Figure 1 (cartoon, rainbow, N blue to C red):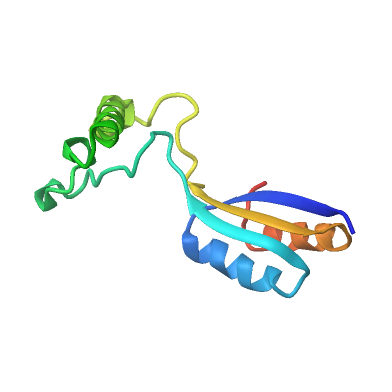
Figure 2: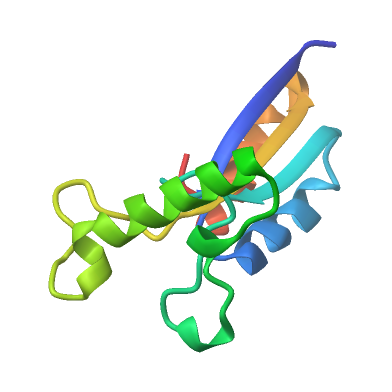
Length: 122
């Protein structure tokens, strides 16, 4: 049978995991849940700089250090970083969890319905 893929965005990992549990009842070929960001690298914790876990200062390898430092610079220069801006045009929507699903073609529409009912955005 032919396979179809679905990319759905959720606001929290728990929402995506709930959808994944319901989708397992269908003929799921593959499924993954990932968080993504507009900047490369592992990111940083802007609300808790006391921890010292600032990715822009990490020095794992030379390539990783450059990537990490670049991500730190990009995120610090973002208009939303100061808290004095709404983030500019096309700012974050809060849907930063990606659920990727591959299902049989016969259950594709049912999978779409499940995702929509659980708050997923496609």
